[in-house]
Length: 412
Image 1: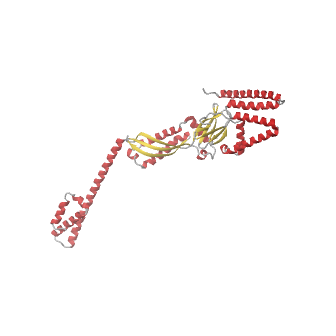
Image 2: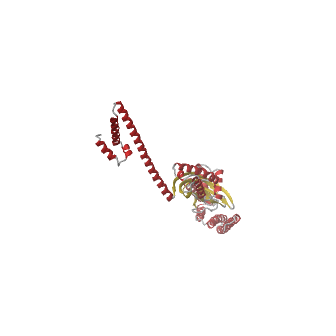
Image 3: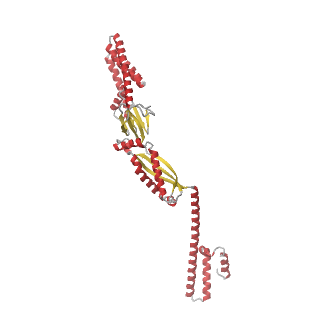
């Protein structure tokens, strides 16, 4: 059962009370031991420090606090054996070591060496509880855990967003960057801001003439956050923060919701057109533009954008495709028949032109009527023998008879 914010505060106070008991117990014990060597003050201070580190180790279950307790014992030994000069040297060596490690990790903190050093000291002293790194829609450090309480240094990697809560209220909405969470503040939701490619298969879509088709569409979807913000080069704006809050509150499965919106507009577009019009490849781009425009009218209100839509294919049902193929074959047959008819028409045209030319030549040479007729027959038969189109006029079954007639009348 989830604890209320007041209950969490009570648990937090109880943990500090337990730590205080450890500190007081260790201080009294240290003062008593120190009194044996006439060093009650030193024993009391040492007890406080050791009690604090041991209390932190028990409360947080982090092994580093036992290491800190051991380091404090080394400081006490240095003070006892060499005095304040030895303690100072030990403290300086520890500071240099912390600074060097912070300098190595400066890029992790995305700040200067001094800022990294300050963060190191806060973690060492327990003022901060460590890191919380989120990337690509999930927690990386600590792995697989979103609800870890602050104060922590929260590192939001590029292409990632996060919503923070504390108790019953929302506290922060973060884009890529670094911030310090407050006590009991934790990451409630992590967003993957990378564009997402999705493929849709929209089946049983009815056309205007009541035929069913299947449409394949490829989509590019994303949360509507600027590219510069996604890459961490600019801070997230208030309007972009509101978009993430709206998605978290109403559309956590925003990818599926955007896909359903696209499907509805694909069905609407197809239902307003006949099958012949839809299957025209020229309609693919028009359909994609229509789907993007009308889908964005809705999903933009959620903080989501359809960047690209590509209509990959439109397939009718198998029986419809078979009928369309038969129709196409019949269309080719009719086209071939029409070509043959045109060839016959051209043949008749050539034949008439030949006869007219024969009459003209005969009259110019003052030939008698019977000679004119023989000349027309001769020229016609020569044209039929030499032109494939004129052979189509009479057909191949009588072409042989015409050739016999030519030889019989002595036409060569």
